[in-house]
Length: 291
Image (cartoon, rainbow, N blue to C red; front, side, top):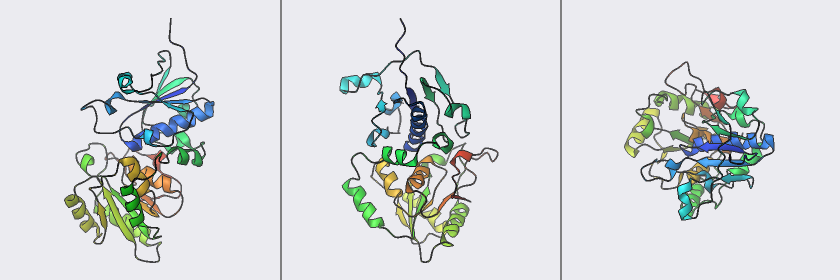
């Protein structure tokens, strides 16, 4: 006898926090459209020794009461919730992570979603306030997070610059952003400011390589944050507090700028990938500038 079907949307969640948020947002929008619950299925690699350097971060957010997290079965011994097995569910897989597919947005429950869904078009019908609430921190900022947030202050000329270096240096997929991008992006923001900007640079690279790129970019007085001990879900919210953003070709800084909202200026790279014919149209938001 087959397993009982649940009239819900299931979404497989994997990789870094920015990717997890896109997967969640696409599933959240589809579940709301179908008026059913959403079940998140984090991959086992998040919880196994040596399985992944990435952490499952969505559990630290104020997710909707209509959202359930199906943890891998082996976590039951540690008090995890028993997973809901739905072997009969049809699986909907995306064809391209960065290209919007209309048939996915219009799909009917029940089903299981697998992919990255990195296009804002997937959740364009979901009120912004819904995701702002869902992605708010469950426990707020820690003491270290609050101290950093206070240090940034509310300066209307504050600029958050993100440099994705460490894991992108040998990437065969993503475009390498150099000083030409960061110089041009900063100038685009400077042109709309009345005073001297306060520049903060956040990066996963070493302090030496980030400092060198800052010098080549002309950021001689930048506050560089590379040894940040904050978990990524807190760092995301600290970065979202800035008035202006220069994002990298990274879903992490994309979400930091999205959470900020329409205020200020956001600049993103025009060429996201090394292959110039590839496009990330779904990441190009109205009001954002491209360089």
